[in-house]
Amino acid sequence: MAGMYSDSRLANEGAHVIATAWNDLIDRFSIVTRRARHRFLAADWQAIAADHVERLDLYSAFVARAESDIRALLGDRLGARDVWIGMRAVYSGLVNVRPDWELAETFYNSITRRIFDTVGVDPRIEFVSSDYPDRAPGPVARLVTSYVGDNLVEALRAVMEDVGLDAACAALDQDLEMAARRLLVRTDQMGAHKIDTIEILPTVFFRGSGAYVVGQLSAAGRTTPIALALLHPPGGVRIDAVMTTENELSILFSFTRSYFHVAIDHPHEVVAYLQGLMPRKRRAELFISLGYNKHGKTELFRELMGHLHSSQDRFEMAAGVPGLVMVVFTLSGFDVVFKVIRDRFGAPKQITRDRVMNRYRLVFRHDRAGRLVDAQEYEHLSFAADRFHPELLDQLLEACSRTVVRDGDTVHIAHSYVERRVTPLDLYVHEYGGAAAEAAIVDYGQAIKDLAAGGIFPGDMLLKNFGVTRHGRVVFYDYDELTTLDECTFRTIPVSDDPYDDMSAEPWFSVGPGDIFPEEFETFLGLAGHLGAVFRSHHGDVFEAAAWREWQQRVAEGDRLEVFPYTSEQRLAAR
Image 1: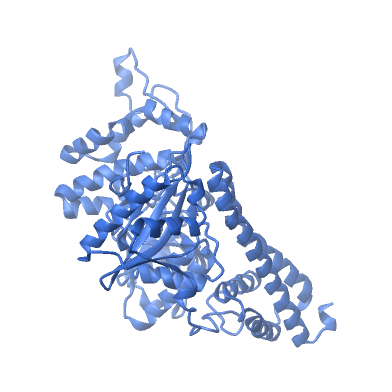
Image 2 (image 1 turned 90 degrees about the vertical axis):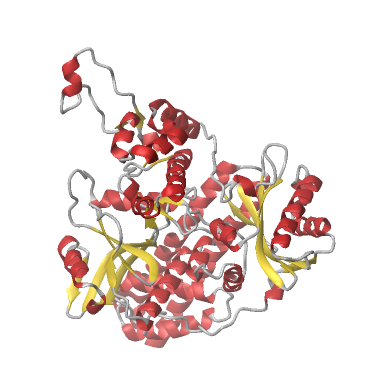
């Protein structure tokens, strides 16, 4: 059929095929997203978890559909670049009228990259930058609803009514009084005597078993972000916590959290508003946190290219102990790390490349519980060779030759993961020491327990595989030995009557492939002296097989132990 059409006819048909696929994807994405309200009000946590996975799978399914349709349409002219140049132009005109035009452009790029398996970028056939980069967001007034703060309790009551959650609240008057007191404390800290206005995004951010109402308050000419955190325990919805600072809101939108289900029609404007509340948060991270992870990758790549263009920074080895599975590098002025899988893994690693990639897919689909760093997967990146420190480039070409190739003055990286850069925990405790090191070690133990509560066993729990965020939170980022708790058998080391058994270099008892002996953790973690004592005093049960079996059983029975993005001090009352 393609042979019967002119280039312009094919370009027009192809553009409409991709635009239709994008429209259908967003329709389905919206349906799944908008179910979150019903799920929350019904306290149907299993359905929420299922919706989370279903929505994550939508993008690749619709890309595959569009690719198949385009291949059928173009036939033997699939690689005709003149057709694709025309198709890009037609598609740009089709999506310009959409409020999600940036996301639609990224979807188009996903198709071209599947068709051409592109190394580098080709601005003639894909959207290297948006065709409408100067298209400003609409006025904030159409995004938010404002409330006068003269009677704070009544203003908050109006907020709850407008977001449609007031009727489900179990003790609304009590919760509003406590929330108002918390906001007045923040107002005092701002040096003001009263709140002038509160403005709220009139859509609720749902994630896991939590729901969040986000906005800001104004007092004495100053503003501060706010968020109300709601839970739905037996008996009805409660306002559980109030967040009142940029840092607290930033943790809510953390790169260690699963994506929100939030019904929005103008993502560009919502992201711009959120960035106004959290100026240090990247646009890429905000798009990702809203569930638009593919476009977030695009934003991050564009920001990286802009940084390389405007600086002399070179790629260098990341701080920390070099890994046996990945070569990890970074840019000093750009707070991400790039992870490339080695061709061969050093002893004692006994895993495969496919297993490593599978672990990253598991983390992508799993509840990250505020402890697993989100990784963005990139294919076919290209950089100028002179932007790499020679030692790093030599190592990449030697250790990752299956993935990294130098072609003249250009380095091509076929596959990599990009994550936010954090300070390795072993370096952190050595550098800071004292109370900061103690706090990090205590949170390290809590991180292990939080992962267990989410059904995750990190595998290699050495300090070097954990990091500390700028907020002082300990997170895990080394996934090659990560597994789910249901794949583990936690055992106590048997006691032998033969004294020679204990001196044997090899276990005298049988050990299965999934057997884990928590008693050995204390030796392998390398936590000695004072920090070892601190860890044991707070988290000694980590060394007990019985504790792990109990956590395992609770997860198997569906006992949700969700880790919320706020502290006990931010909660309004003990629940």
